[in-house]
Image 1 (cartoon, one colour):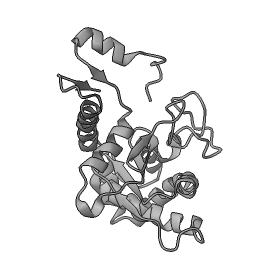
Image 2 (image 1 turned 60 degrees about the vertical axis):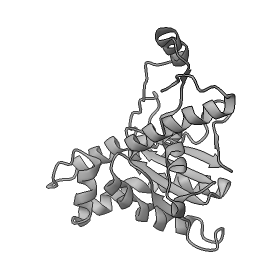
Image 3 (image 1 turned 30 degrees about the horizontal axis):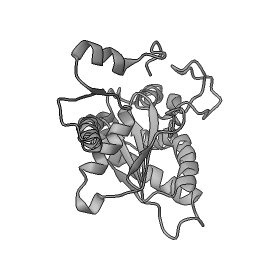
Image 4 (image 1 turned 180 degrees about the horizontal axis):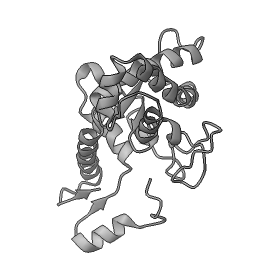
Length: 232
């Protein structure tokens, strides 16, 4: 979602400008870390598949309390996997990527095309309207369907304790949870002895800040350095 940023050494530039140690983290992985570190006891998990729905769609993975990044730092990046055949342009340069169907902007665009329906400008508004408007609710579920299909493969591969759903709106995340739950239960039938655990996570802005702080704390304990640090 930053199409003009290619091979930019963000950490090096900030270290040079600020003259302090700088850690650079993917926003989705910071959100996962924030959810994991600052969870209540009943929501404390060690194997997590985290879904972020915002301008794009991405997943982050935690196994045995360790966040997986992958050889190319692309672990969980499902947003640009092909998910349809409508020639929807994506910021990555391809067409019909998952985030052109299931991201917040994509869902807003799909809802805006419905005749006689209100204009919904935020995830909060979508959640409120879906709770009382059957047409909006059905369209939201239609937008989530290709996402559930991609997630089912990750769930089967990783077998996490929980799938956490994060977005800018707690209400929206909570609205998406049962939609994913129903479709994942169908896709994963026979693999899981009971329903897969799907829960709403913290709002993404809050989780990002908490995860950034956790990343700095973790780095300081790991290196033994407690000097001034900055996380991005």
